[in-house]
Length: 424
Image (cartoon, rainbow, N blue to C red; front, side, top):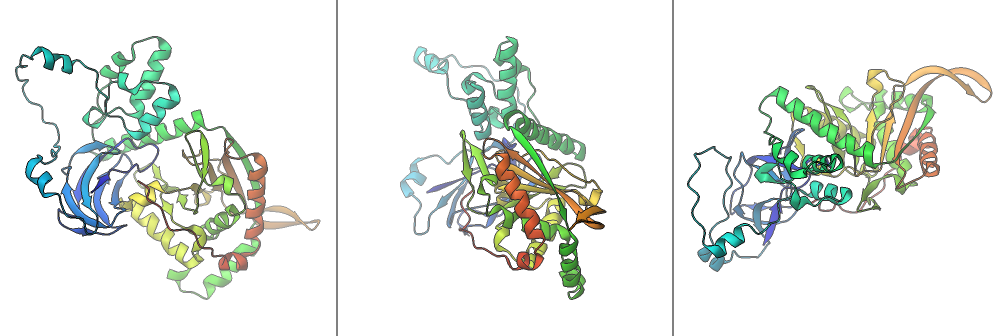
């Protein structure tokens, strides 16, 4: 029997609220199938399952907020039968419902043995992100009072405890005085929660990641000419945007600098086997998300264009998938539409790099010793010094510039990647 658990949908996610189930007990499910919708601080996300099988039991009721890692359902593997003895003798897992304030009931008098057990310290539920943060800060998570769902200890609790220890105050006193977060109930609440999530992730990034920044001015005349010819021979619906060409160029350039895509976890860099580019998308109500387009290097440009259009549409409609939120191996942000010349972003942990593009502008340029006016774009790289050095970063930008001068080759560049892994 497999326990289907709430996955982490980003470094800044401690907990989520189950909104609805798309399956019921007895349903057959397949790997990659959307089985539930979970509300995070950023968006409602369609959660996929990563095992084939039959749904055994649904353990959590819609409307319940639970920490990351909580078992949501049991799944029977293909050919596996439910254990009749377990069904007959074991009580069903408790369905967790939203807490409703009730009058306090009299506390029963405990027998000495029971009382002794009651005062024995127990392990507090700790979200995976909070556990990692506690290890980094040297905090005993069992000594911190949790303010998350089901009193779980969150990243904010750990950081509050660490801050309190520095000031000499008892950690538990501050934790206990911190009000428990409530689920966002209005657009204003959701915007506030999203800003808190972004602040937590970016604050962590600037504290922990030793960033270095590089930039490169890239001539875009050849790429834009190729794009104009391509679009002239296709319908409006089939036309490509420069952003797609840049996205593909990033994937191709990364093949020679694998130190720039992957994750830094447990004190070491873990290179990614496939390039899942997280695309920064601003939301209409404020804030942003950076869901992944999978296997960018293996897809032709027209497929990437369709994927990008679909991703932006679904992100702004609040219909993203869990694999899109948890899989990015590098983030690409393009602020060309806003007219800025360059963007130097903050790395989204535990990723190790972010690539930025400004607007394509016609500016003076010296080519073959001749001053001319050319469309240019400033490409920037923010990278983690723990995973790479400026030398690798410079090689990447040089390769990025080179591939954008060969749009025909870029259009044909397709390479296969291994099958996608289980993000949970």
